[in-house]
Amino acid sequence: MPPPVARKTSPIRWVAVALAGVAGIFVLLIVGTFGVAALIYKASTSEADAQAKQYWDKNVKQCGSRYFQLDFSLYGTSGVYREYKGFSYAVWPSGLTEADKLNGYEWKGFTSLHSNSYRTLFGRRWSEWKDGSPEPSGVAMFVGSLAVPLDKKNGRWYYFGQDSSKYVAPRIDCEKLLQ
Image 1: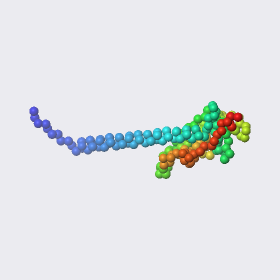
Image 2: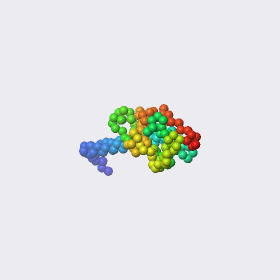
Image 3: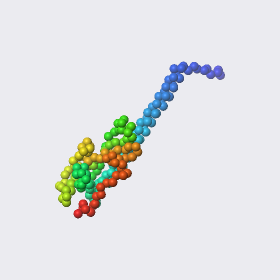
Image 4: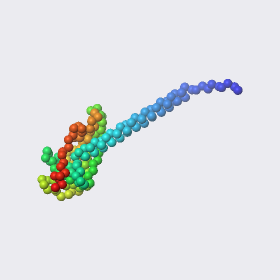
């Protein structure tokens, strides 16, 4: 058997193989980076959903089969009670700018209240039922319903710029409202 013949490999072939390897690693890095970014976004959105639920659980109280809120958006410190039918909420991410990221924001957006119908307690009398959600005011006008700014900054969540762990919701007395 004749000895094997050593074949010369051209430098161009070595460069092509090296470039293919580098390109493969580059593709893996890109996919890996976007995969991690997607996981981080999904985790942040899931966290935002949990924070929104926590906020609305504190601010809309279920009394039997009825839902009530003490709303301060239009009425200053005294507030008014609202009753909702078909209560739900949504979470709206607003995206982060470069400045937001530099300032420590990890997530920014809103959570908004929605209802099929509602009525308002003025003094000791309830208004007639109205379709939809209450009219928006202030920042809520951008979303189209009662909305609450919801942000995550430096690892902490905030409602209306107030640390969510220190947030105290208004007290809602079911007995008073069900009379």
